[in-house]
Length: 101
Image (cartoon, rainbow, N blue to C red):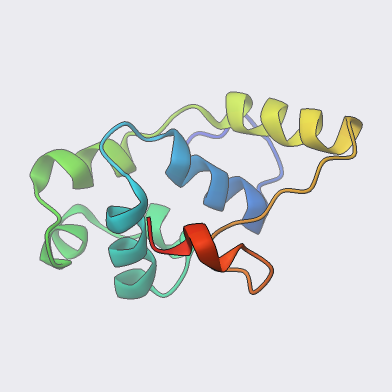
């Protein structure tokens, strides 16, 4: 994985999932559950990703081909600079009303 020498954090991996065109909330939940975490999603092999329920070759390839780490890092810097709160849907603070969409 080429991240352009950005020090990747859990937040980077979580946000990266939201940047992938073929990965919506339901698919992200499947990937996170199957791989046991956001970082592991990006470090899992193609064949294993394709064994996750509902994940086909196109989605698995899109995950492994992800190369927008600079954009993710820029977004996280923007959030920090403007003192915004970033919540991922796996966090307890994430609003229950929108958690299952």
